[in-house]
Amino acid sequence: MKKGTILFSIAVLITTLLIIPAGPAGAAKPIVIGVPTSLYTPFGRDGLKAVKLAVEELNAKGGVKVGSEKRPLKVVVADTRGGEPSTPVHDALMAYERLITKEKPDAIVIGAFRSEVLIASMDLVSKYKVPQLGTIAQSPGFQKKFMKDPKKYKYLFRVTTDALVDATYLNNTLDILKNKYGLKTAYFIYQDTLWAKAFSGLMSKHCKKTGWKQIGFDGYAAGATDFSPALTKAKDEKADLIGMVWDVPLGAGVFAKQYAAMKVPALLIGFIPPMASPMAVKTVGPGVEYAMSIEFPVGASLPLKKLPKTVDFLSKFKKKYGSLPEAAAVNSSAYDAVFILAEAIERAGTLDPDKLVAALEKTDYKGVSGRIRFNKQHIAVFGTKDPNETGVCVIFQWQKDASGKLRRVPVYPDFLAEGKIQLPPWMKK
Image 1 (tube, helix red, strand yellow):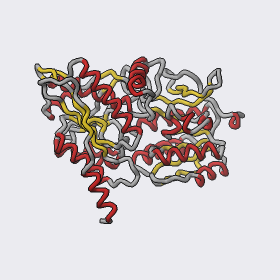
Image 2: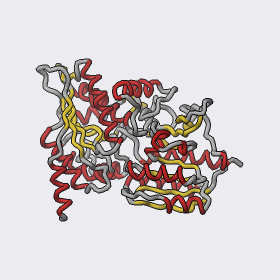
Image 3: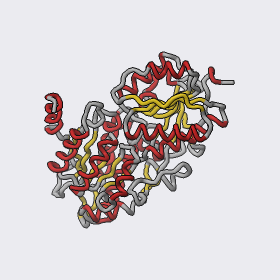
Image 4: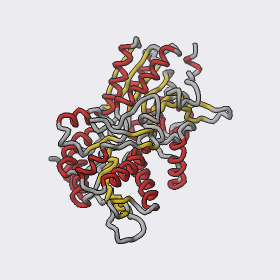
């Protein structure tokens, strides 16, 4: 092992655990919620803020009832650094295990950021029998591994979407762009990680099936910081559309700025955090106009007029932290997960992990992200039609309002839409 890796591993092992107080002092022993995740990413940082917000709300009401006793919640956090391109999976797992063994959480929320860490951590969580409500990592590999040994992996649940759900929303939008707006040539760029490759692969496969001309399907390393070759290819080969999926903040930010600076005449759609963020106009500039993105699930950063719970959650988040979440994904899942856990604890009447798992399996919770129920693979059920029946997502586009101000306009699905898709002037026929 190289010296630098050894030192990095030691650094991870001694990662300081942040402990959020349980609230007013009292005799009741707190319920400990562990949050091992990557705080390098806005997903981890904003998700943690959402968890703290939910915990404060529950503690303000006296906590969570365990049997006949009300007990406060306490959050302990470990920065796994799993979202940093240079962090080996093993190092992230060491921080994960340290949190479990030292802090002995009664349950885990949020969990791994990177899908590679999630898949590897499934054995770790099962070993220690800690119920986990994961809210970030998106790889469909989770349910594939789960089904190999459901009894072993029963402690793991996914409260948020996965790449299959996200791609379904974007594929439906691609159909609209092709059939209604006449777009026909696509170029896909993806971050070479499990979830992004699966996500982009599903979009690419759908385009091939539905008659799009595909000029490329190119992966870039997660640490990449120059996308000019891909953007030049899109310009030279006259792509109508660039589908991109990326989550590492540095690379995503560089891509967004290069896309805008090079004035690439292609509609951008997918998931690029800096262009999906409510702060995109300030951080990227006016070049975000017409860019389309998925927010998964609803309520992550965009208040929707037709879903009051998204407005309520994000208003409370902004009041407490001074701004909307930076990440247009999974924050509402983190918030919902705390309430789902609290309800399960009260139904179980105990913190015994096996009984708590049985209670979680019976979850039927109407939260910010829609109605959350788990299927036999312990993943939350998401659909495209009704938030009263499933969790839901939304596709939005940056558009100018009547005053000329750029804002994010929900355009799909129809039951959430507040406007129609707009093509840039250079694409209108």
